[in-house]
Length: 294
Image (cartoon, rainbow, N blue to C red; front, side, top):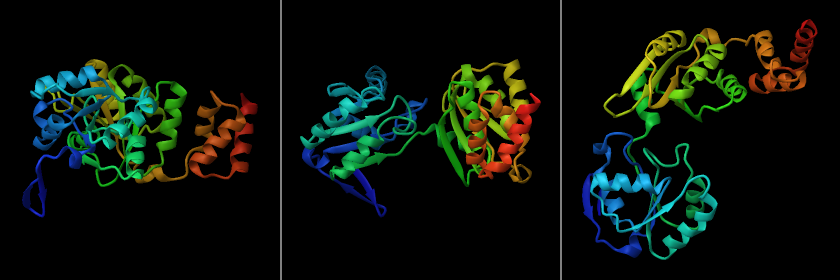
């Protein structure tokens, strides 16, 4: 295997026992040419491939010309616990295990951190082979600030959970990045327009593929464009940090009106106070006033 250290090249003889360990390997998110030579070498040499979907993994290997004469096992949310010890036992037996996702960098909104943590606890070799990552690529394409950012995972399916998430994220002074599907995108942008109406956003899709696209602007502008030309594919949503005027004291009355649509007074007050670090008595009094007017 070929390693680079201090700008010098070292060749390490292949030794199955010395190479035993967990290799976290990033795979392409669209363009097969994005797989690094080192990643291909590790995937070729690995004894075991732990993948979200073994069918997807085998198809990828075929396209890349990587031999399939190795063990493929499923490692995803529903199988994580049962596979956990199996993988560690394989490594302790001298096996080289590569952990991959369906596309992109493993562990980013994918299972695997528990496995990595346990391997490290047991002194098992863990290494990463960097590569394609939709979060980073979307940030680069968005044209929004990249000096600080927060990845918030997948946008929730349910309306209340979606609004709760955006309310929680609203006052965080950094660029936000989330994953979404094209089918739910309009509902997500509608919720975003309620909670953060002044934000600039970028909707990035089909990264590194033929129809790669970045649609940016205000929420209203992006929604209008998407209504005229609906899109398909996998989506990364990038949200600009709050402008200076947004970081003033939140509109308590407006927040309460939204919360009281689906929560009790007690629940609404607790959620708003916890999110914005406000005094409970003041918010409670305002909540009672609004409730009595209804």
